[in-house]
Amino acid sequence: MIDIPVFYASHHGHTRRIAEFVASEIWQNGYVSKAVDIKSSRDLDMTRTKAAVVGASLLAGRYPRPLARFIQQHRRLLSRQPTGFFSVSMLAASEDPDIRMDAVKDIDLYLRDATWQPTLRASFAGALTYTQYSWPVRMMMRRLAQRSGDPTDISRDHVFTDWNVVREYARTMVRATEARTGESQKGRGDVGPMRSIR
Image 1 (tube, rainbow, N blue to C red):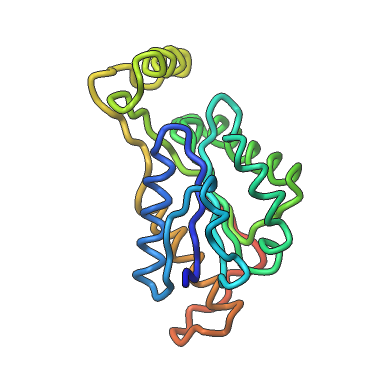
Image 2 (image 1 turned 135 degrees about the horizontal axis):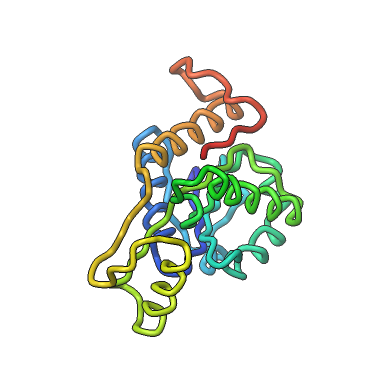
């Protein structure tokens, strides 16, 4: 049985990598966890989970379509347990604080429209994994990078994710689960009704 599944919806694979990292950190902190593609979520019985994390990539202002369907289908269960949401984008990698704030606003607007308020939310810097894209996608991503001032060297990948921030997010999710279930024996305390990690 999976205690805390980490569901993900990824455009090009980097969000899956982050989801796997979050699941690994949760597992190391005492709960069985696994990264699960949202498109395969039907195989998991969510009525037996203690918490859940959902992550998605934001590209050109849009999240993958399966995300909205997943939230709609599981909204009641998500509202009954500690939950986390994380968004992965290049906006969050910007050196301009206003642009990074735009990424946070995108999260707030999306969750408001989805009528879901997770316990914890976060905006993570993404990656330009040029070597893993098909040629048409590589050219498209390079054009987008040129417009936003991001790296355009397509001979290698460019990862901007701060893994220490991701690790703290996972550990905070563990503390939220412990606080709700009363399982904590480590005196970590409650994280409160909602926290944002940027």
